[in-house]
Image (tube, rainbow, N blue to C red; front, side, top):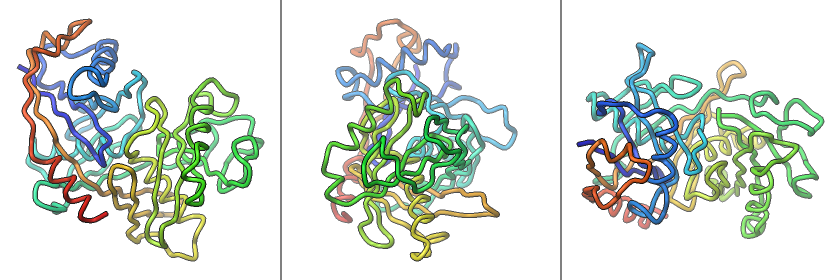
Length: 326
């Protein structure tokens, strides 16, 4: 039997598969097929935003490797919310509090934090590398090599945008509360994730609203997914953009609370000799343990009636915690 987990970070939900359990590892095509079936809202546990795949790492310092497959089968280079849950999983597996996880573009630090509340596990993860360079996003037809807090009339009138890779590509704008209530984010996110002349690979689009000097609200239209309850790299990127564009608030190396439709996280933006990285701190919740025979996962059409599901108390504890602190 193989054990899967249903997990979430700020209610950005995933299934988690540890391939070291398997007698036969999946091909990439099989993983994409598995992801599309698992994440379908009509199948197991109302689906999810993606699949987190844990594999052995070739890096001596890393406890494991994480791959993130979006619901549409595309590959994300990073996922902050997902990394927290993978980090917790590997920390418990190897009984470590501080560890390294290999991701698509970097080996990233993970640290288990004190529980936010009973049954509400908290994990801190490193979000990096950070780049504003055109080729790292990539973008074209904007007439510049970097886009940092600048107007782009083609996207929206009277707004300024920053394009930053963390390493997932993000387009960030700090907006008013009134604009957050409109359909502009959906329209822009949809436009830039269809074939377009600006971001050929698509891009995550986030609007950030300043609640007070130490608090943001962030909503993200995520590439390959659409709207999710939260996007960890989006909240991290928004925190960096906020720190850069509001230097008077002295935000570097200080805690920022970032709320989202799924709850909240905390971020700390760091700068080392013109290099940036963000610490993302938030919940790492295991909602269900799932058992199934390995051969069932390899089927082209999966029979979900053969899955055994056991729920935990963690999601209820998280919801109560968020309600109390929102």
